[in-house]
Structure formats: C-alpha cells, structure tokens
Image (tube, rainbow, N blue to C red):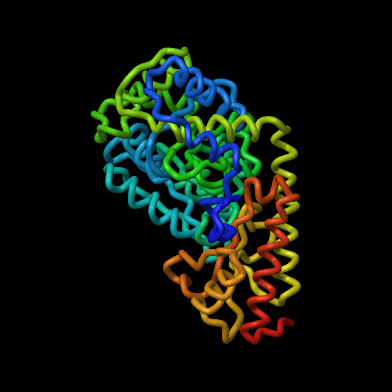
Length: 383
C-alpha cells in the first residue's frame, strides 16, 4: 500500500502490492555490497529461501535480473548443445522458455496443452517414452492463462519413467502462493522472481538448484555459453555470502536484497501450509464472484486454475480498453490478456502476497467492488 494519493491498488499478476516494511527496507541508504552490515543480510536471505522452497540442501541463487534470467541460467548451465529438452507448454511462457532453450542449442520437444488446459500425466508419460530427455520444464502457473500445472504428479511420473531427467519448474507466478515442495517432490530447479508472491519490487531473479543439478552443472563438458548467467561465477558468490564473507563478481542490488530479507522473514513467520490455504481461500472468493457475474474463465475447470491469479474472458459487448479503464477509474488496476492467440479476449486479476495474507487491507473486497461496478456501468447485466 502506498502513501501516494494517486496510487491505484495494483491487482495484476505481478508486480503485487508491497508491504510498508518492505518498501522501508528498499530505502536503505547507500551501502557497500561488501559492508559488514550487508553481508549477513544477504547470507540470511539465502538461508530463508530454503525455508520458503521447502528444501534442506537446495542451492539458492539471488541475482540482479528478471525471472527471465532463470531461463538463461537453466539453458546455459544444465543443457549442452544438441541435448533434448521436453517443455510442457500451457501458454506464453512455455513458448518463451522453449525459445530460450533453443538459443543455447537444445533440441526442444513441446507438449502443448489447449488454451486453458494443462498437460495430462498420460501426455507426459507418452513424451518421455519417445526419447531420453536431459530436462523437463514445467510452468507451474502460466501467467498468460492462469493455468496451474500438476507439478507433483508430473514429478512422480518423471521419477518413475525417466529418473535421470532433471525436473525444472518455472515458479515465477507460483513461488510463495502455490504448494511447491522442492525436496519432497524431487524437483531439481525452481526459478522465480521477486515481484509476485515473494512480495518484493521487480529486479531479483531467484533460483534454487538441487544437489543433483549442481553436480550436472559441474560435470558438463561443453563450455558454458553465457558470461553473466554462468553458475561458475555465481555459485562462489552465493557460498561466500552464506558463509558471511563478501565476494565480488557483479554488484548485487543491495537495497532489493534488504527488501527481500524483510519479506522472507514475514513469509516464514507463519507455516507455509497456512499461506497456501490463504491463497486457495482468496482464489475461491474471487472466482466465486466471477462465476456469480456469469463470466467465463480462461482455465477450462477450477481444478486447473491457479490460486494466485484469475484469468477471465470479457463478456460479449464489453471492449477490453473500456473495462480496464473503467476499473482504473475506481482506483484499481487489473491486467489485460497476454496469450498471443486470445490477448484481446480476456483480462487477469492478481491475488497474492499481502493482498491475501492481510485481509484487513480489504484488497479483495476493493477489486471485487471495482469490477462489479465497472461492468454495471458499462451496461453488463450479468447472468
């Protein structure tokens, strides 16, 4: 929540609203990245990320960049030229991850779900039967469709059918709001970003790698085809800061890491199971309202729909710009469509972070009121 009078409530699928304490941390005065006051903040943040991702020995990376940098890290460090990668595609971000893998020389096979649907376990099994894959990538929540992948079920079939295949989860729109159990489910990489359910302004690319993934990286034969994304540069940095020692490769975003530290302490102050349930409850509140208005979801069923966002088709006769602008006139911002095939046909509402975990802020009530009033003012009468 901002003190600025002209601030509109930001209810898009990221960036989300930020806690006041996070914003205060962001205003930390100029501080050296090797200052004795900063080093333990960075080190503790790395340790706290393990708690958020439910891993004992996973290796966190915190690097200046967007979530997209995580694709480059995976593609350049874990896949060698001409190795096969299986991409489970549920929208825009499956397309983009595939493109990134191809840039680094991977041979990409995609299993594409219909718009609004997710890849089935049988489809994954059939694909794994076709050849040996170095990695499989799963977009946990594709922000373009609001579809939630069955990461646990997919991981189980991969472990059973192709145990050497690394399991990579794009968790940009799921980490911190969807159930995601790194160790228990046998995940090898989760990549995410700061500006969604982790509740920190944009600018941090965050990734956690399993011991197995780190070993695959160390054993690779081909040179790493990236300078900035190379774990050969970043792994010593992470190890140093966690050991409470400063080290330099590229200057970390000091103020963002202070903000991350504050947010991670807030997140881990309650059981993660409680946080997951809070997001499920909030999702049901939003989706029940959308359903009562007679609107149609992009996800084909509630079962395949994400808990941190909701994607909704515009009702007939309502123009995209008209609805978005009308909602904004009620001091709330929601997002338009992103999927290339249907971008002008739907809108998206984000509901994650403090908008969910601190109901006293009444963010859900505010966005519901703004949407309902806007539709009425545009002449929509509902069911």
